[in-house]
Amino acid sequence: MALFPRLLNVIGNHSLLGPDIAVPQRHWEDFTPGSVFESEPRRVTREEIIEFAAAFDPQPMHLDEEAARASMLGSLAASGWHSCCLLMRMLSDGFLSETRFMGAPGIEEVRWLKPLRPGESIRARATVLESRPSRSRPELGFVKFLFELVDSSGACLMTLTVSPMFARRTAADASRDGASG
Amino acid sequence: MRFFEDIAVGDRAEIGRHTFTAEEIKAFAARFDPQPFHLDEGAAAHSLFGALCASGWHTACLWMRLAVEHRRREDAERRARGEPVAALGVSPGFRDLRWPNPVYVGDTVTYATEVLELRPSASRPVWGIMTARNTGTNQRGEPVLLFISSAFVERRQNGGPSS
Image 1 (tube, one colour):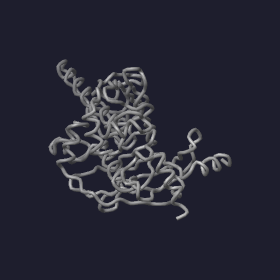
Image 2 (image 1 turned 30 degrees about the vertical axis):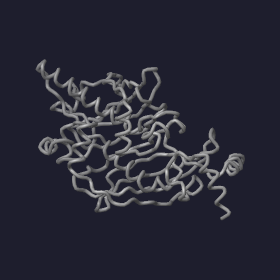
Image 3 (image 1 turned 120 degrees about the horizontal axis):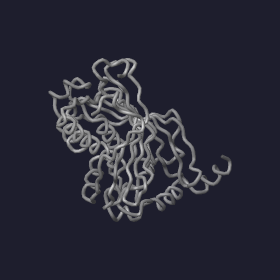
Image 4 (image 1 turned 60 degrees about the vertical axis):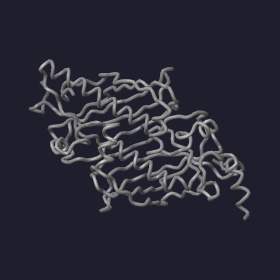
């Protein structure tokens, strides 16, 4: 109960980030290096691979089985950008929706390690690497993550390293931590 | 696509431009990045961004589409001149992607690519690796997308020493 007024205060300042404000959510302070979160599996269909490619990456190897066989991919596989977008959506639906996520100013690195094939079931895995307060905005902190897209055999298809921003729990915490850091 | 040996560091091309509409910003966000400031004008007005703006992934995906279309036009011109066309392989990834400014409804983004580095692939002699700096700039000259990509590009038949 002692936490409740503080939580309400933060929600009051960031009330437009999500409709589910009744659920207590993870703040910057709640991410500990080494913590791992994993999403539910999601099956990727041939139709959605081709639909995405037609809209955003119309290279024959993402559109057509015949052309894909003649390419470096060996058979039809999703655009790497599609993998990034699927990861974003899977994180948005699960992991991020339970946090005070404030966006990210960029992406440090993406590696496309293995092709994402039609029919594959993928999961998103998030590992906290490190966290630091924002110097310019005491109400925010950065958390550096390694996000992985993992297939049904456990193989990693893609890694994405990024440091998104999260709201901090209270302004008082922020000024105290800022003074010591 | 030109062959690996015919590309030089510093080669730069404007690959195309795109004007973002509210409808497509919302449709993309609903599919892949359902944050209120990408989905709803009212929520966006009260967010850090102040108005509806595109998902950063949307801004980046348009770079990809325009890069493919640009290459397709170049390949058609090469074929029309009777010149051979090199294959472009897969990309191992990208790094240092930044979204320095939001893309708002009605903004026109001009995309460009510039060759940063060229090196032969140690493990695959038929391919070279091209590293490029890619940008998106809005109609006010402000950067909205920056990233460093890499991709495999086909080498001339003999590979090895360039002619």
